[in-house]
Length: 320
Image (cartoon, rainbow, N blue to C red; front, side, top):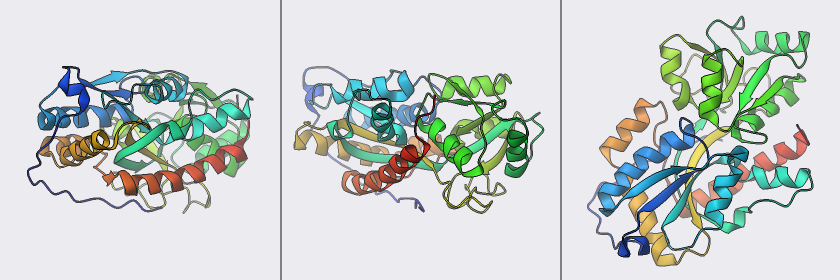
């Protein structure tokens, strides 16, 4: 899958405010992870830009837990009035499938949420501490084969975005690592920086500065093409793993029963926000350039991406 950059028209737009603005309530963008991960890095510039456009408060609320399931479910059950929206990652479609693998009733279903817009999408990167002994995918694989289940890697929780990406590689490479789940990508990143774990699958935007500072090393890329931020880093596909492809994207959703006029206002606000120069600078500085898709195109993208990820989870099966 190749994800093209989108251009923006910055023409003036006149907005009728969502229902939440009429009674003084802010719009809340729920991030289903702790601060510091891809969803959080996307949500905060979007919120700031929307606030300027709508001239009302737009706040970010972190509701981490269960690899994102708790925050996703919170928005799925929220009042469909435009006051509560979700900044989700690609794990949105995976979590209900994983819960069914363990014969659990899903905490939410995808059909409870309606796409608003995609705001960015990046190939996942395999990073290790700068003092790790591995300098390539092959060296990392060989070390894992020599000592199965001993190299600890972090994730945002079982079957979360970071977990599924790594398990795709483990399945393809026939290796076993030690999975250490955290409440989100932010805490996992902190654990890598402190050498409490030795590997992490994460978005470029969360590690770019740490790599520049010499604190981390990037070994591989889950994209079909090399990441623009790390053009020297090979993909897993070119390294001999044709089915190892995974993107960490961030996109906004609302409860599915949100009235069409309110959804349209939210879509218009996000479209204008994505053209805001401050947002573009913030995304680019984080190493995660904007990738905008409006609701219809995002819905098609989401369906295609979800089908591939669900198939991967079903191949992986139960993983503790």
